[in-house]
Image (cartoon, rainbow, N blue to C red):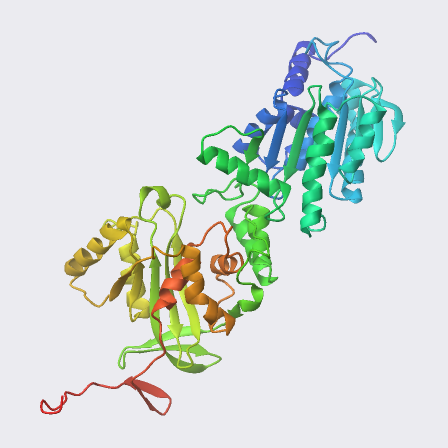
Length: 527
């Protein structure tokens, strides 16, 4: 009975072959602690297809922090080193190792940790030991390992270490640059240029002329970082429909339509918690960098955190006198209110840009307080009466009912004409003509950025504009405002709201309460 195999050999062979061909299957079978923590999201299967396709020579995996870039790399390397001496023997492939892999991380600690992971599973993982036997070879250090069949893996904390490794063996079969850029090595233009030079002048030549593959895992840490330049080049290749030398796997935690990428692991509540943490830590741009991969260089930013003033209070409207107030620390200040409207009404912008309605209050000292704003995608001009779907005009009437703006300033473009027609029609239908609005041309002589800067720069410079800490999107757009910002919808709406804003006038005070002065008819002789 000692030689009898009680295992289902054919089933196990099928599972092994599937694990050889599919990194997710390998992970679930041999690395369940990493691959069974959550249900596998669809984008992981798409990423697995990219990783398993050995014909892809340059692959950039640009995803949000914590979404599996490094885990997939670990599983892929463990799989290849495990199968290296067995795959051909078992009839799974005609080509196999020994392989020569290089793995670069941002720091020595990460490099050692990644190598420890690989060594641990190759040496102590019971399932791997059962199927593949002893894999450990004659070299087994914290930076270099060699398996029994001669496959090698070197782990380095800087790209320049890859050049020396190539002289020790053969051309690399795979080099992985895993989050090789961080805040420390992208701090100066010279450092960023060095990163790019090392990738193109050190790593890439080390893969030639053989069929070596290069894979980059990362998130952009600076606008001029190597990863962010890849993103820009990729997006430009799509818009201009021209080929790109990199195969990009590019995903945000929340896409342009607001869809969560990995809802079972990073649900909306968790992303909102992280957003609030970064905002409360006075680093709101870090959320957009880490999870939406949108960055802005401090050199390009026109406004900084120093320009932002916060306020905490409430809005109150006195129906009898028709006067608006903001209440801060129990003290009521009379204000006039104004709204800016930046609609995304044309078919191209509706699904990519936001429609914004932002309302501000102006006190007697000409300080501006952002009261509230609506920022939504895919808004129609007008919703269907009786339905839950609201349009831009519906939100304008809702804002008018709550905040009573002196005027709505609405961007006037060719595609905005239906919006103006809808406002007039809705006023007649509702028999409500209290909504006062004016059309404002964006301007032909100056760009949108110049127009926004012209309206807001002086106000920010003297500290007139105050926003609430919960205005995450607006705060982020203010800090990243510049030639390379991703979105400018909220700050553009703020500019329209401030365009014709002015302090309260014609108010009469009586024991802390204010009333509007009533106009009196002048004598016709002296009028």
